[in-house]
Length: 375
Image (cartoon, rainbow, N blue to C red; front, side, top):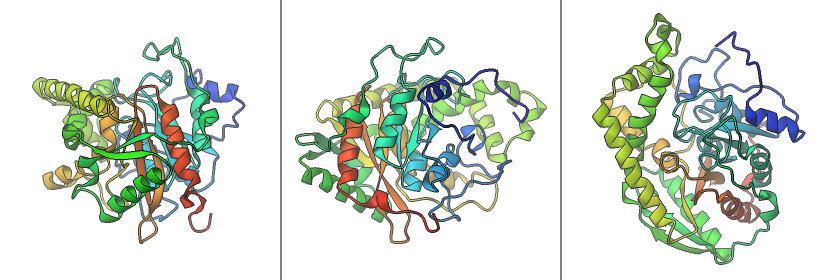
C-alpha cells in the first residue's frame, strides 16, 4: 500500500472538511487494523502514559496522538473494539457508533458486518461534536441508515436523573478482570447512582464467549477481503502476526463460521433483552490496563491465545457482534498510573444517551484533567 494514493477522500474525511476541521494528517496503526503486530513500517506507536506499553491495537496512533495532545480529536475504526481499546488504554473518550450510523465509503475493510468508524477524543463534548460531523446517510455506502443525526452536544446537560443503568454481572464479577479495573468500574457505577441513575445488575450469559464468536467471523471475513494477498507470494510482505491471522482465517471451516453466526444472533438477542430492562449497560472497556509492548513476533502458545479471549476483545466485541453503540471513558487509574476504561453501551441509534451518561460522569470526576508526564 506504500504507493496507494486515493483519488477521492473517504466520506468521513469529506464531512470533516465540510465542517471546517483542520486535518493534520494520517496516523500510525496496526497493519490492516489487525490487532497486535510486531513490525510497524512507520515506527511503533507508544502509549503516552507509559511508553513501554501499547496505546491500543489497530487505531494505535489515534489513541497515542490524542492522549499526547498532538491533535484535538481523531478517527478510529472499530471492528472488534479498536476505538474503545485505544480510548481505554490512553484515558480518552471513544465511541463505536451504531452500525450504519457512519459511512464506510473509502475505508479499508476487515469485516463487512462489523467495521465502524468513530471518534477518539479527550472530552465527551469533542467526541459528540466529531461524531455529529461525520454521521449520516451516504448514498455511496448502502449500509448506512437514512435516519436523522441528533444534535449530540445539545443533550449534554449533566442530568441523568432516573436513567436506568445495568451493570453486566458476567463482565464485572469475573476473574478475567484486573482487580483495580473491577473496583474502578464498580466505583464509577456508584458515581452514576449518586447522580440520580438507577443502577442494577443484569445478566447476559453468552457475553463471556464474545471473543470466540468474533474470531470465528472476523478472521474469515478478513481473509476473504484480502484473498488476493493470501493467494500470492505477497503474503510474506506482511507482519508475521498478520500472516498467521489471515492464514488461520482462510481455513475456518464453513460449519464453524455458521455456528459463530448463529451464536452471534443469540448474543444479540440477549443484549437487546437486557436493554429492554435498562437504558444503558455498563462494564469495563478492557479487563486489563495497557499491556506491555511485545519484544518478539508471534501470537504465543495455544494457552496464550485462549487466555487472550479473556482480554480486551472479550469486553468490546459483544457490541460489535450486536451492531450496537458503545463508548469508553476514563474512570480512573491503576496504582502504577495507567488509565482504566468504563464502557457504556446502549440501544441502536441512541448514541445520545451514551453521551449524556458519559458527560454526567465526566463532569463529576477529575480523571479527564490529568495529563501524561511531559505533555
